[in-house]
Image (cartoon, rainbow, N blue to C red; front, side, top):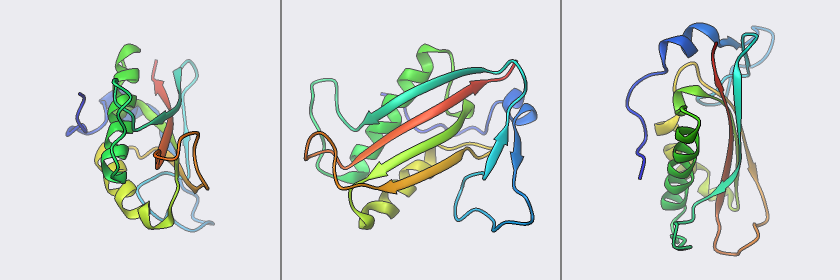
Length: 144
């Protein structure tokens, strides 16, 4: 199972993706960028909403364990395209309880790399199965 990366972003991504943080608006609330400008010719991979479910259909009860599985599953999908979390430019996440926000963010922050991706977190009333507590989708870009 993939683990949260420990290295910073790949040099080509860090050099090519330009964070957009205008002085005229409030700084980000957390570890994310308001916007990222990608160079012409960047190769995109869009990952569907990914749940914290194991290959045998098992679902951990804990939101932290589900979030770790979400990010680990996304890492496996990105690897199929020869990408990793250093290539992620956008994260959309959904949790079912406001009180799960800190646990989700702790996991997310272990996976994100510089330059920080754009990111949105939404509190939702539920998913297709009651045991799901978190879902994450990402967009990644490999720089030319």
